[in-house]
Length: 397
Image 1 (cartoon, rainbow, N blue to C red):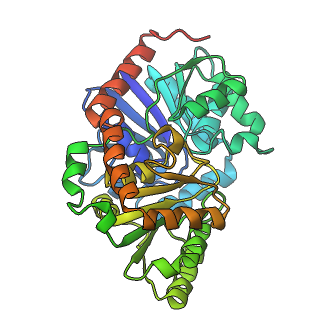
Image 2: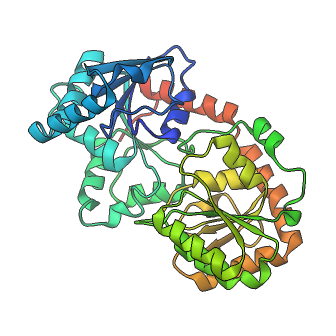
């Protein structure tokens, strides 16, 4: 089978997805939806179609690179910039040519606003039969962008043009149908695939969550993230934070400044983690945490939430994600509005005061992941999904 995946080439989630099928003997191709010339180190056994690239990218890696080979990364970046200015539709044209040349059995666009729109543009002017097209909803593709004036119609166009729709949440199935999608909905699978649960179990801290003295905060702050709301709520709980250490990850400059002031004002030891932390180290931090906070105005199933659950930390998560499909509010986690520090403060106080709650949640969440997130089982489901699409076992319409 030949599969062409259109996705962010720098994304660990896309790399983990492809890793699930890298040992099937299939001919795998990756067309970067954003043409930056980078490839995440976790990608393997795939042919990558850049516009211009530096050959050094593939050294020591199981990758094949296609496009214009340019001497060094800086010159390659200049070449890509030049091509975009002179030929603004070049990538859609290149995608169309790649599809004609390699004749994939399946085209899979992972994410709407880059991969989906790009694939739609290529399909509009494609001569002949376009291959079966899967589009996968990531995070806020429908829940947020599907409501915005600049994206609303394009999101619906993608849904009308694709053959198969995949997502992580039942919520997004309902959204897709409400936006006019009438095709086949594929089985629900997290965008990053499953977890090696045996390995994760070995990383879990032996100490019960109620004895841990670390709080994790996702520091995203921007168009979706609301890390500053979480930090404000923690500041209002400072009377309970003596002896605790706050660790903030995925933080931008605004959060870094706020975190420095938070530490000065509260006396709570605060660490802002570097931008790129090795995955196992991040898991180890969650394994030291009593509770982990993640707030955003829109998301699907947050990978950081699943990692929190796996490591036994108590999740406090915004209700705008699909967390309610994985945890029971008030029992195995607490769901909160992303913009209200008052409600988030109440949730933090509850999680800090109730030892039994956080310990019971740890056990319940592990059972949930055992039944729903085992990598070997989900890998088999994904392989079966591709085989069924290629054989047209699923009937569209």
